Length: 263
Image (cartoon, rainbow, N blue to C red; front, side):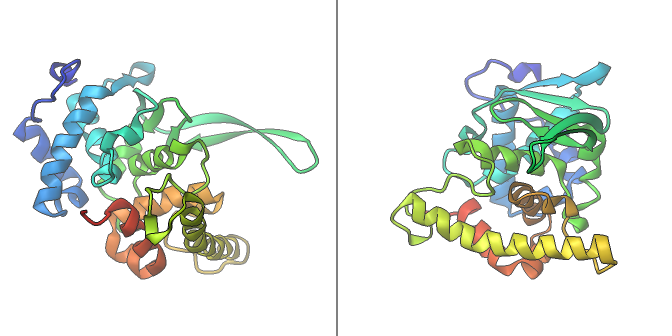
């Protein structure tokens, strides 16, 4: 599994055949500008050099698996200052063959603890590893029209959690949006994403409870603003056109963050 990359200070280029196979399987990568695809390839090689893949319950980590994850994981940080530094809080990536049943525990407003099982396709742990279902990673090759991508979802969580809080607002660069202070920049970000989340959540509730038309994005995004951010990032990167039609203010906001102007 790309063992020839491990431990090298400078990552060699990914073999042409492996790279072309990845672009063919995930067309939303190949459809980007040529300069982006070239940078994506180099960044994916760095990712493979720095991260460690583990197969759960006997699942085999092949070159195909590792490269598929790497190529999609680096897409959100392709133009971010610092690049892979955004993923610097972890090394391990655990891949299961399919979805996983995770045990959850929550406390309600009255202090009562509730335990339940949740089926998950992926999970990003704060300052810990990322877990992915290979079945769902593969599905990302076919679900761009729905804006679905489990790899981007989980790595968007990593970007969101970089400052320690999964609140739907990543760490913003100095001067973001023309704001002098980080507090003002954060407030401006919230002023765009919060109304979008509120409308989406209302649409999801109406669809689920009263049979209304379901929103385009994965309804899982209605769980919290951090989940909404991750779900929105999926759609932004794999189906920009439809995302822009559904969320024009978010498109402008994400463009300003994920593709900052060259200084």
